Image (tube, rainbow, N blue to C red):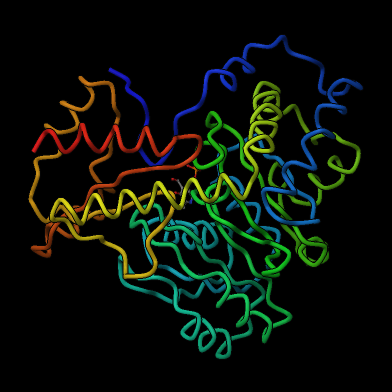
Length: 361
Ligand SMILES: Cc1ncc(COP(=O)(O)O)c(C=O)c1O
């Protein structure tokens, strides 16, 4: 049974947005399409707090990992690794033929700017990659501190995965000097899975011009050429673009700052619910995400049956990131479960969910 989604992606999509998917198709080389595409640009820039281009890819976020890794370095990339997704991105860079060095942090730890600074000083890197919001552990790293460090390395591009935070946590791309910031549709943007968005700085395009082997589908320069004509290089998922137009309107109506505040409130509520119910938060203190709360299962709840019981009540919940839990279990530590409070969910819905969850133990 499918319930309302409180899992860390795909997130719950509102009916008005879902309905956009069933609009009749339009040709992607028509004026109507160009008008649709152009109408998306201002709203996307607002969500990213940027004047940079925000490109749209008909792929999930992983495709944009590949785009960033392929296009932004000829050879050497430094990756911060503090969980499953940051680790995976580093693997993707390697599989794109780049020489990857990893600066590692423990599970539940945030990326530390001083360690990154040391690592950057030790090598001739072209790009530095980090995940802002490690969905596997619910850890949000500090982009402001990292941005300060990056100022000392003007030749290194700053690439950020904001897959599970964009639209739910503030990421001021221009202020932070982020060259590439990528996000998936199915997380805090509360859209159906299937597209992803990426802001790209002029510096990143310039670098890409010097990089060979960028491929075609994920070549940021191909995407840029089409973007400037309000088009995409190839047939995009047109239904998603209708849905994105609707969702950007909805974000504008709510106000981006109100949206971020709503996420802060939902997160605060989830954290205090955890504490009041005798649990501990998994992330390092002060680095808890506003879009997903990762909670230590200190009371050893049987999440297999809880998930089933919650599904019967109409809620879809998560029992923690599989590989992380396996590792924690092997180390004799408490496993985790995650409460996602991202996208268009309201504080009222989070309260309702947690009350139902609490009634099961
Ligand atoms: C932080 C993070 N990065 C990247 C990905 C991969 O994104 P996608 O599944 O959209 O390819 C995920 C997926 O959950 C994620 O949470």
